[in-house]
Length: 184
Image (cartoon, rainbow, N blue to C red; front, side, top):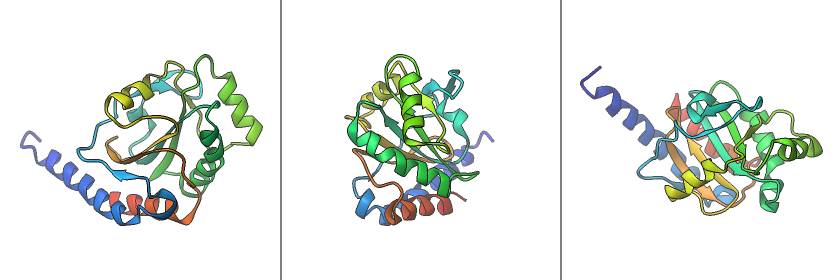
């Protein structure tokens, strides 16, 4: 609108989500940290299920839990079934899990892993260039794998963590539910 009020209300909305999420960061998700300031991840580029390049903005204007993982990362492998459950229990118009494989090379290895452990509801994304990890590392958001980011509808980081978590438990559900409710 030119007056800047749209930006102010967007910033207020982000702060409201952070305020709602903060008290839920405990137990299994205690390593999540509210991010200030919040980076805009709209331009992060990776491949969709068909191998076509997309950006984070293309994954939908909703709250998302973004997870970077690789088949060679044991803690990543362990948490993938939890991310599948989170997607099947909470995924929809208001929330989604964006799990991005950073395995180098083609998508065969991470796709085979999906089949091997029976992942069917978790969307498949792949970044063979590892560019997403590199960009998040530059922003001090990623130090190793797995990396998880909770982002808002405008692709801004609400909270982040390095290391695995139990994403299918009551602590994770409470955090996600708080983010979804505050984002409405």
